[in-house]
Length: 415
Ligand code: LLP
Picture 1 (cartoon, rainbow, N blue to C red):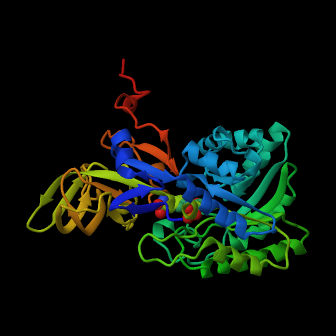
Picture 2: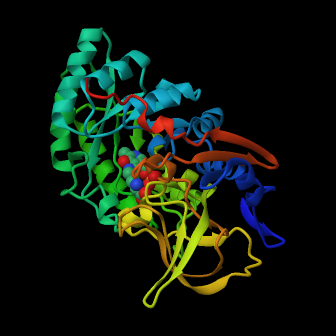
């Protein structure tokens, strides 16, 4: 099912007109389709068939509790990168023992809490992190489950800011160092080795780099086995892309089939950490045109959402489709730059878009479910927007629009 469709020229999310949601909750707002979210999770989950597996949804893509709760109810595990994300997972009904802890800079207090809460494993990215985990586990009298995130040095051929598996990136243990680290871990009293993982980048639209990374991991797994280190799971991270524009992103089933056929003669549990591919196309950002400003050189449509609400266009020059909420289109058809009110030249949501616009029109920025709200800020003292979830004709406000007073919550005058 396509969750965002036009009915009589009006944009709908499942069976609710976007216009009616904006009347009720205001603009700008993020709107998610629960059905689309569930279907995408199930596409990943079901593609594994009988193969032991765990989908660990990458919380950073969208960490709203309602969304995490939907996934937890479907049996999802989680990939987290901070104690805050772990606490969100638990608050949403997720389980620590289905949660993996990634990230290059885990603090001691985060490691301690994760151990106390019973994390499934740490994805260790730094040699010194292993010593820290061993030490803290010793203090707590527990055994810490670890996997090493190895950096396989493959080119994910994606935007340099979201490419993570090259040797010049800060992520993971260099693959040539990994055997040594595993041997160090094996000799530590408070460590249990459970797996291996990698994450080579985000928004990959080709399966080949995933398979190249898997090949390198499997070669290492063989070396490990030869020295008596056996693993329970292989975690291939996230990174599967979605269609923003004309990209031909592989379906989860195609991607998982390719992985499983390479893994056919092994029985490791397979973990994946998809974020964008689960939630990206399950959400839109709705914004209202405040002013039209045609000039000699450029036509600007100034809208009420900005880079603080959705930073991907500014930060990565990301292209996201922008469509009218009402297609009847009695507006001025031109090529517009869709820009926000923030005082930065880089504050745009889309450039050179042919649209028929008039002030007051609503626009939907598509594919905004992942790295949209979760990367939003209050820059320019703009309260963060509301988030709404729809299922069929049911609506739930899943995060209230912030109030002005919330902007300075916790701030104090110097006395
Ligand atoms: N696992 C790890 C260890 C990660 O670092 C990430 C994303 C994921 C999983 C999930 O990747 P996904 O399946 O969503 O591609 N803000 C950027 C994307 C940054 C991705 C960071 N790491 C964007 O808006 O494009």
